[in-house]
Length: 80
Ligand SMILES: [Zn+2]
Image (cartoon, rainbow, N blue to C red; front, side):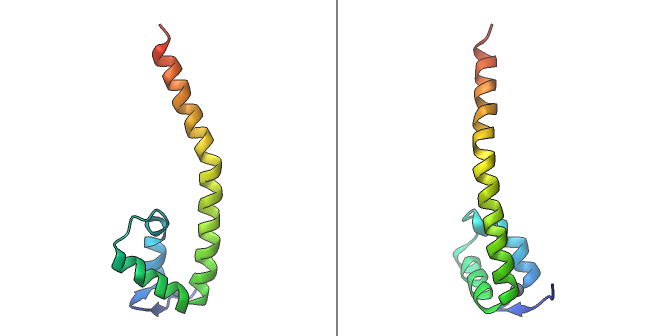
């Protein structure tokens, strides 16, 4: 993957912020810059789309597991 600078942010910069971006944990100015980069950079658009899909799939799989772990801990706490 070639490092490019689009909309004042490099591909590496976008990747570094992407997890926070998907979590809505970035400043509006950073979000706007990432979106401008993704629109103007086809390689990040492809990668960002794949990454977003992966994160969503992972979360869908992790969420029930986390609930189970929490439930197990609750049951343990109430057991005497
Ligand atoms: Zn890029």
